[in-house]
Image (cartoon, rainbow, N blue to C red; front, side, top):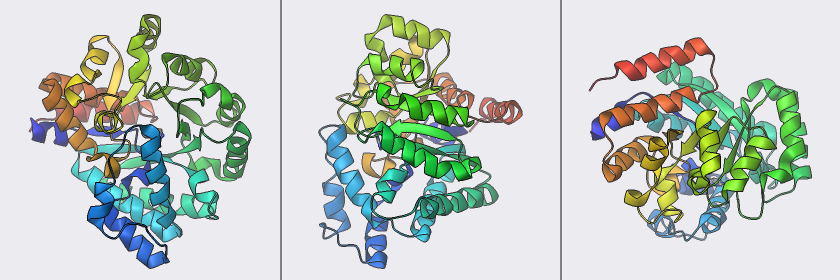
Length: 332
Ligand code: ADE
Ligand code: ZN
C-alpha cells in the first residue's frame, strides 16, 4: 500500500515553497549569503521543530526564510522541491509563495518570481511536471499592504495562476481582503484561501461568499457546521487537506483521529497535500502513505483522493481528463 500511495499520479495544490526549505539547504544558503543563524547544526534546527500551534510554526518558518536572498536561492529551493515531487508521482504543482515575506526584507518581487518561474520551467522538461504559481497574501498584514503587493505583481500577471491567503488565521478573517481578491479576480487570476485550519467554519463561509474562492485550503473545521458541509458537498468545493501538518500544528492530536475519512464519508471533495513538508516531516507521498495507514484507507479511497486532487486543478479540461485517465489506469 505504501508504494501504491506514493506512486499514484497526483496533483500538489497546497505547498508553500518556503516550507520546503530543508535544514541542510538553510545552512548552505546561510553560508552562501552570509546570513547568521541562531542554530549550530542541522540537528539543532530539526530539534526546534516542535510546534504548539500555527503561530509557533510561523515564527520559525519566517525566521528560516531569511536565508533566501538571490534569484538563485529561489531557483535552488524550488528545484530541490521538484526532485521530491517527481519521486512522489506528482504530475501537477500549483505552488504557493509569500512575496511579502521577502519584499519586507528588501528582496524584490522580480527576484522571487524569476527564480521560482525558472525552476517551474525546468520541471516540465526534466520531469514532465506542469506547474503554476499562486501568490499568497499574508493575512496578519493589512488589506492595503496586500493591495500594494498585488499592484506590484499585475505587470507580470501572466506568470501567475492565482492568489491565495495564508499566515496567522485566528483574528484575521477573510473579510479583511475583499477588495484585493475582487481586483485579482477582475484581472483574471484564480482565487483560493486558507480557512478552517485553526479558524472557525465562518471563515470558510467568508472565503466563499466574500473572496469568491474556488478552493479552500485545509477547511477541516467545516464538520462543525452541518449547513456548511451540505453547501461544500453540493458545490463540490475542493478542500486541500494536509494531514501531517494538522498533527504537527495540533489541529488533531494524532493521524488516527484526523477527520479526513469523515470528510470523504460526508461526500466532500477532499484531497491530500503537504503544506510545509520540510517542517512537518513529509512530502505528499508520505502524507498519502501515513494517512492511508493511520485511517486504514482502501486502494479505492486512495485513488479517490488522487482523483480529487486532479479534479481541483486549475488546468483546461483536456489536460485534466488526461491526468484523470492516468490516475484511473495506475497499477503497481
Ligand atoms: N503558511 C505556511 N504554512 C501555513 C499554514 N499551514 N497555515 C497558514 N499559513 C501558512
Ligand atoms: Zn498552508
